[in-house]
Image (cartoon, rainbow, N blue to C red; front, side, top):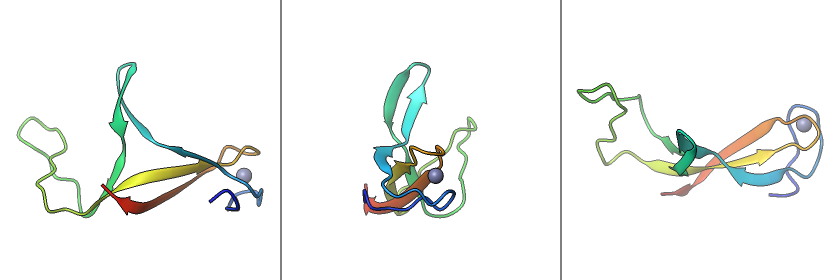
Length: 76
Ligand SMILES: [Zn+2]
């Protein structure tokens, strides 16, 4: 993926990374893409009912302009 081209400025060679989920100052995991609409539980939090396809979010950052290119190809 290092040969990816920035869709914002055209720079080639984006840095690989991920989108971390934070709870205060601590990383609680990696963010994932979830198929379908957001479902809320009784307390207002996001509810994963199960059976919904989920994929890790892979992020590639342009060193020139900071633009992020996101991909979700790897199932959780
Ligand atoms: Zn760029």
